[in-house]
Image 1 (cartoon, rainbow, N blue to C red):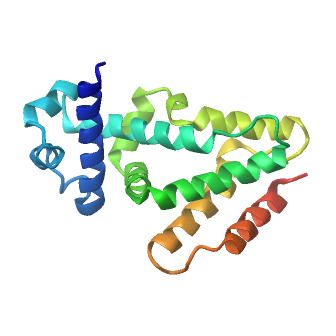
Image 2: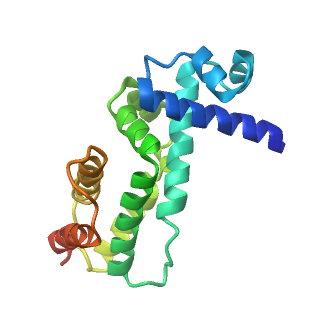
Image 3: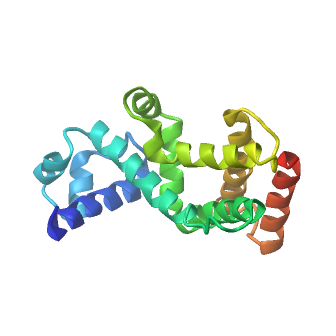
Length: 191
């Protein structure tokens, strides 16, 4: 794909993120996305057959961006350090990218998530990386063996809640609070 085409597609993604952040899925028509991205509506349909396809591809794009950031960890670090690093990177990334965070949250609560689950291999949005990471810890005897949904809830749930509390202005982010939260999580899963 040449740079100009890549830039148009990225502009469409960024505009869609911004508008969905402001107006939600239903309040964001393709014409508004085209106008915001400074492209013709037909250009959007060149890349995406429908708004549904655009939103599904945007989710994939967001997860790829997020995973690239949070999983860029030195595999030679001790497991506990990687456990803390990945969690802190996730929190920092979503706080720096509030539009992505809100989009992902809306996506998981929408019919799009069911569509995506039934039609896509979930490995492309990072579930496999997280699953492998937790399996590594359990097989090494570092963390307790738990089913995947349970450990994801224990690991990601507090991060999501913390991000929401900061985003909604209920609290300020401090290194001390963040360190305390991940330490509590660690103490709950370590052997």
